[in-house]
Amino acid sequence: MIDIYILELLIIGLLLLVVTLGSGWIKRLPLSFALIYLLMGIFLGSEGIGIIQLRENNVFNAKILERLTEFVVIVSVFSCGLKIIHPRRWRVWNITARLIGLLMPISIFGLAIVGRLFLGMNWGEAILLGAILAPTDPVLASEVQLTDTNDRDELRFGLTSEGGLNDALAFPFVYFGIYAIKDNNWHNWFKDWLIIDVMWAITSGIVMGFLVAKLIVWVDQKIQKKRSSDVQMEYFVAISTILITYSLTEIINGYGFLAVFVAGLITQDSYRNPHKPMAQLEFVERLERLLEVGIILLLGTILLWQPMLHYASHSLIVIVLLFFVIRPLGAWISTIGQRPLHSQRRNFHPATRWLFGWFGIRGVGSLYYLAYAFSHGLKGEVGEQISWIIYNTVVVSVILHGISATPLMNWYEHQVAAKRSLAHSTMSELEDNSRN
Image (cartoon, rainbow, N blue to C red; front, side):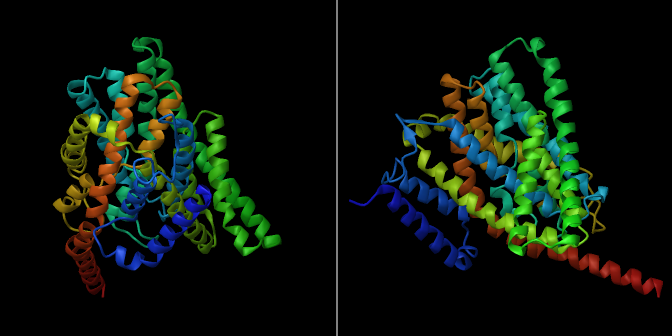
């Protein structure tokens, strides 16, 4: 009799081998790697052949999901920060400010209205639903984010920085929803929420991300002058930065995700040797891909058809309104009057604005917020309702965005980005000629 655990290792090893060797073909297809992992997880899980069983008495331990997704997200947001060169050029952050300051609240409150009017939730439950589903996922959205540190595309930059900074505004409203579910009298906790969970947590997250990253880079460079460490071990400086930044920030009740993203920015900007952060980025991206396999496989194994179908009508309302109304309309409103950096256009190309709206990918971040809410008081029928709406939304996002990401980004690169680059080159040549 073959040990099930050994069989699981065999199947996962074969999956990784097939996906890796076939990646050249997969990238050309309207598929994402996440979709393949999800389908394999469903096949291996309790609704498939049942090799991987992660539910006990039909219940999944939310704490396990919380810890696993937490680690995946902190690795991913650090990667987002490392991809951004010259973060002190404030003008490039205009689009990020719009996506976080306008699009995020529009998404949260738009979904809250949907939950209140169409799903029978009270305002606390509805706001929690909005806060969980509003953020763009930093893990699964990597296919539409900056490809490398030389990438200057504003669509990719906006989606990368948005994914890294989601926590700054989403997490306060996760807390808001949890508090409101526990106590309908907002006056009892609203002031503490505003001071601690908004002002203190955001400020301390930014400060800790800056200070810890600066200190680690300074220590690293001082030690390297005296005695170089093993080249292979240098990669673990990135993991050390992630873990130390996150843990210290959480200890003082700051937002660890935000701190880790800031740490990525500061790490990229602080090393005198540009190859150091590049090496860290390469290592972190590889780790991120491996973790993505595990977490999406995990999601597939915990899905159950009966509750997914039971909440299918509620999920459909949320999915249709979020993907085709709230996010696109919010992105369009948020980018009104936004001028491209490298173009004579007065506004973004319409295709760019609609792609900002379409690529609101939901995934690992939403799973983390959901698991966190369960660990801090979400329960009962409303807990079941919210959880299966989240699961269904993430599954549909993996499918729809996975299928559309490659062809849409290829079209964008050829029709929009290429023309903008050509226009920018022509302008530069004309300016050079006029100087001569």
